[in-house]
Length: 315
Image 1 (tube, rainbow, N blue to C red):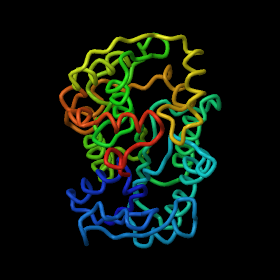
Image 2: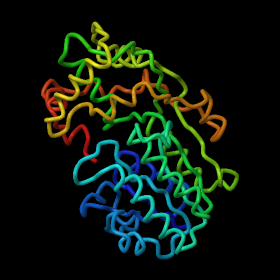
Image 3: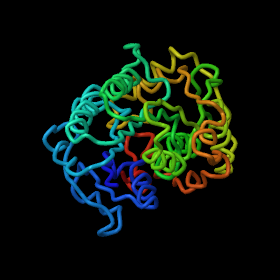
Image 4: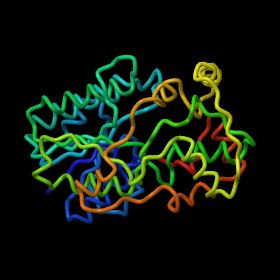
């Protein structure tokens, strides 16, 4: 089976591609930036250059394709890549090309909490993408994921940067909002497996790790992994909004206003979601994030001033 992967060289994509190869699929990667395909061993995958916002490029990538895994998405909007462009229109272009090619399965990766509420622009754009998939008439599986962690992630590396440099950690509100972080390799395994699963067609499944953790608990786990102890100060959400707003002048603020809005949103699946759907237990956060200890003071300063070092996040 020839499987097209969009976003193949991204944080999740570069794990999904090897997982598909392990399942003996042929893989075609839609690559936005020439040269990024070097993350894969030579001659292991077929490369097609193009942007999901270019309908012709997307259509050209579907020649002979049996299934597609659509991973392209953004949680950081800008003037050049809005949520509507990337998360909705990108999905629309993929759906149109998949329909034309009559693919046998479209696996669409979304986010837990996707909603038709326009007050949450990111989650609304993911919901729009899901709706395009569900109403496409194609055999589909929608995978809604909780926060993803692993070497090169944005989430835990940003927390680690704060732990590395700041003596006191500020938390918006109570910090009791629950998340269910899932290891990137485990999520990739689920996605690659879903491609072959007939019984998952027509379904939307939520996936998270084995533990539902509060934001406070995640901070504590990261600090403990780094051998640090940090005091937490809980600030009113409105005050955190002001502080976050002031950081938006940075080229890449460690947290955006949109991300802050997502904190109170439900971001958990059923505790055994991976076991129930794919038959294995995913990794816990604690004991599997040694990479946060590799952060240098210089790395941490770069992250908190708006520049994620390439050696930390090279995708």
